[in-house]
Image (cartoon, rainbow, N blue to C red; front, top):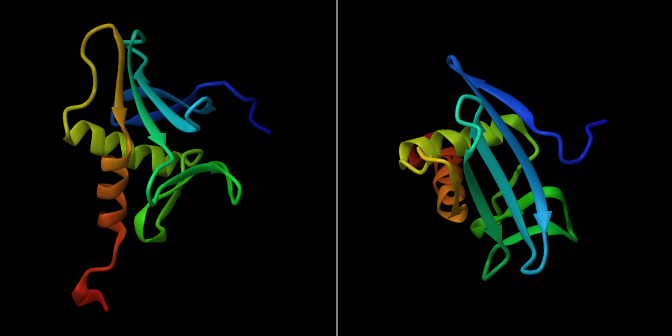
Length: 124
């Protein structure tokens, strides 16, 4: 069983990333934090807040689950999901290069990730 608050490793090519997920209040939100081990003080936080057509962990969802438009859901505890968010953040140039914390709304990345998973019209 994984201990809460312990950062997990994700290796992409030769880069080691540390990541963690947590639920915070007020403004019920899920936060996915990413940072490289070689720049430990430059952190990206993807923040997911509940809102119109969007929900974060809590009934009926499990811990770390987020659901967006069209009923698409992702679990922020799964390394494969985290990797897809990391890839999308890199593609958008969201990773901080200087020390400090950069917070970004995670929902635009969510939308891009689930759109990539949707079947194409030719696949039907």
